[in-house]
Length: 438
Image (cartoon, rainbow, N blue to C red; front, side, top):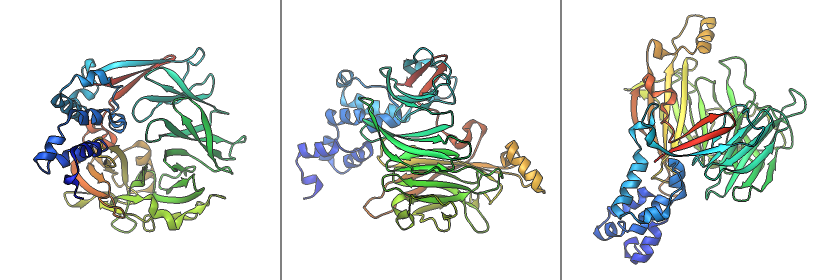
């Protein structure tokens, strides 16, 4: 039966399961469907959708207040939330951020170690302290302490994933062994965000060398082993499927000319092409494409690695500016940032920032340039490229990667051209205050 032949009630129920992009697409089909997409209950559903609100880091919504608005006012509210204000940059009017919530820690938890982590959606915050050496997670909106992890020592790092639906979080934690140099032990916990109850769902049965944990997304987490002291040495990343107890080692390049980010279903990376002229690529690899390469987690052998020429890349774009390729193998500094699209479920905005180092005549000068951060932006160009990554239109198809804009980077853009956060954290002795743009 054609979609348009369904009854109005059925169509509205279907549309209520869609994102804003698909609702607007349906509204352009014909007059009848456009009328259906103007239903007030539909836009109430869209603006209260947890995925939409989490991506935009919106404060808790009041259904009573929203129900007092007309359909036109609800549509305008969605537009305003998506587009955002011009006052995001530092120095904007303080009235653009309200209300504010303050988390006051228990007595004795006053000296924070390292940095806090504001989880996606800006509802939960994770931090640690010198005094108790614990990791703590708080619900910002009600001040409730959700979860605590008793660290055995200060050599602990973690990454957190909020499971779709908002009721569960997964935490991958790496704790250093008893003796220096013995490696880290990694395990994954699931946390019920309503009750605070947690239980272990995965533990690595052996110690592994570790520099940092990049992310945990669904059944996968990504971490980097200990980095080499040589700036031009390649950096490896270990992708672990914790549910299947398998892994694969990826090598995209050096610390300066490559970056990789794990998102649901994919790894997005920028890295050099492996043959002359060594220009930069932006690549997307579906996690399912690694099926022939997974190895059992009985040990991790870093020598068995996939390079860009062997990684099963599913989409790629050559990075260039006005037809001129960007980057070479050892004189490039790149950053990569990815932002989910609030109106199009499964779509992302990807921004790469590529600066090319001047090429000193000696190896000593090259190393010195890396450590001082000197880039071609000082004597040449640095370029910011923005891409759109959209989900496949049908099962079995690859995601669509498309260049949206290319421009010379300016100091005001910052590294990677990141958009200023919608939720801002102010830290003081013994407390955090989080304010939201509305």
